[in-house]
Length: 205
Image 1: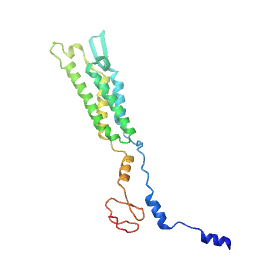
Image 2 (image 1 turned 90 degrees about the vertical axis):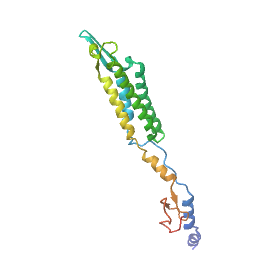
Image 3 (image 1 turned 45 degrees about the vertical axis):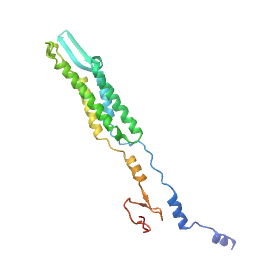
């Protein structure tokens, strides 16, 4: 009999207290972790640009016995901006990715890629379009080499990759949770434009 009495006297939490507890317990936000499916086209292309910058860009062949290959680094001058642009693309991508909002790197990558392409175009015109001295690029045997082509392709791919960058799913979930709406009576989650709770029916306006 004593065991039955103790069982009857056992205090159990009321449904209302449980609802209050659920309502007052804040729901943790998902941390801004980098999205595993992030588009890595831009940083990968930036690595290609850095690699190709040190490969032969042009070939000078005044004669069969006098052939020289010159890399982007050896041409130097304004072309160093191309290398700087590639480093900025790579660094900005992973910096903003670590913050969980990689799409913020988009304008930086686009500007850097376009700057690199315009610099290459300017240098091309300078080398192959300069006829003031009376010596043409054909006379010097100037030809474009894989280093220059690979650099331009890398910058173009970085540009395309920047256009495809999107806000990560994790960040979108955080935005939704920050603006989430809950019933003041039962604690159920509600849509932002809800007037009544779908669980208890109370007016939540």
